[in-house]
Length: 290
Figure 1: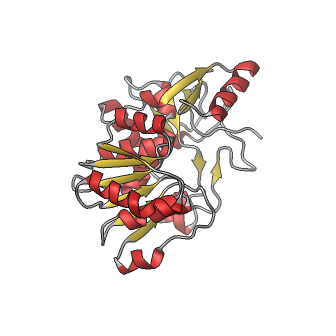
Figure 2 (figure 1 turned 90 degrees about the horizontal axis):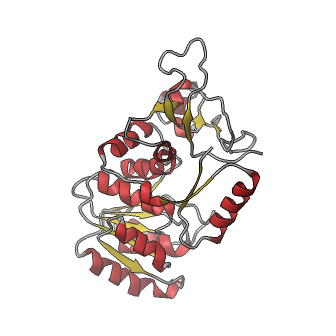
Figure 3 (figure 1 turned 60 degrees about the vertical axis):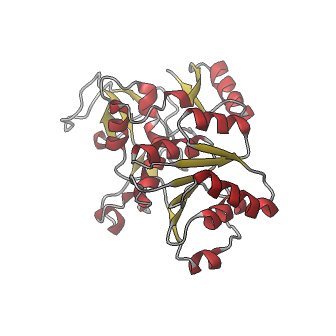
């Protein structure tokens, strides 16, 4: 099947009933088509629609193609100062924006981010745009941490993969924050990252599980519950593209540093792009330009 769900493009043709778009418009595409009839859709939580048709989710083909057909209401015009590449980055950025909305991040929210991969980095950028005054980000990889620091993290902490190190690392994280941690985002989704987040977050705070590294986890939930730490989940996003585009237009968020590699769309370039992404290294977001 065709993969791909982070995309932007130029309108070539519109249906007879489309009044908001014309050929030549540059747009970012929200990749999920919900039914708009179920209870979830009717109450505004269309990201939970059980009949969602989402790019690159079997059996629905994705957007890694020369052309796609998509509903007009899920195609968002790009501001003049926002590139097609930045428009495609609205998809991962939407995950961070939705997470910050779910956790009610604001100017009084000090944030911990577990994981400095692409989703951890966009969550950090979103939290700052929502007003978070202090953000600490944690990872096992020095390069990812250096990128996070360059993007504006107030402090970075390198950790291990050993569960036995959690108490010591929680102390380091709390010292680096230098104040109570109000919200933690686990952008990895492993036993250790979630356990660390639960232990590090202040009593009455929130832990938002963003990453899905493990389908099942063993975590210290009872001690966290006794401290009234709320655990929040997210699934994709809803109504995020307009805000993402405004963040990009206004300069409150700059996603350009996350785009580390660019390739054309020939067979060889596509293969090279996937190999580059698979190797990891300094690759964050690998972009195709058709």
